[in-house]
Length: 248
Image 1 (cartoon, rainbow, N blue to C red):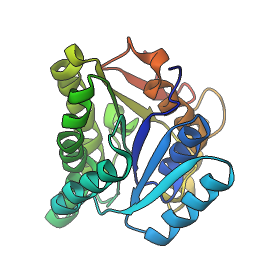
Image 2: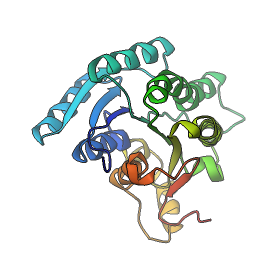
Image 3: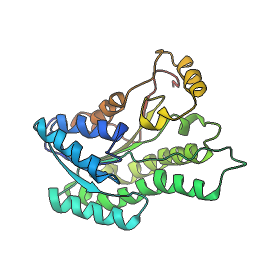
């Protein structure tokens, strides 16, 4: 089996942005996709779009901030598809503020969604992967988890922690033919970045060697590669998709 054809992929935050792009790209490559997010209506629309192109996908309403919903959602996906081969931990939030003014609730919400949820989802799917001795876990982190960002102490901490989680789990499950990798996007044009101040966007683009922001498909193509058979000897890696803004 080459690529991801015939595999079952669970994608969180699949209703928009990078998650939506990942779902489309994986489905186009032949994977069956479990679409997970809070907005069930958008997920249904995406499932219909995938089906119209000959792919297979199903919507599952899932709030990753809820441990109970994570457990129930993973069980529902396995009941529907029989297994989970690929997990894409993409769902994430921002609650930006200078550290001296940041509310504890905003810290907790970002850490719970961006770091604790991927941990819980990994726990929930790992049994299926261990049983079949094959799996791919791909965590969507961020360049800001590597270099930091003023006003994003919570977000940068969550994404840096996700890199640590990636490497730790990669070491735990490598002997079972399960790889765990991260993709670290740089400046990507999405709904999340569209609300940021114009001056921040301009300053970011000026620092990108390729001279422009990336797209959600740039990230999705990296995810598809790491999910594939061809990437079977890559684990514990952080794949930068940032236009050259951070090298090495």
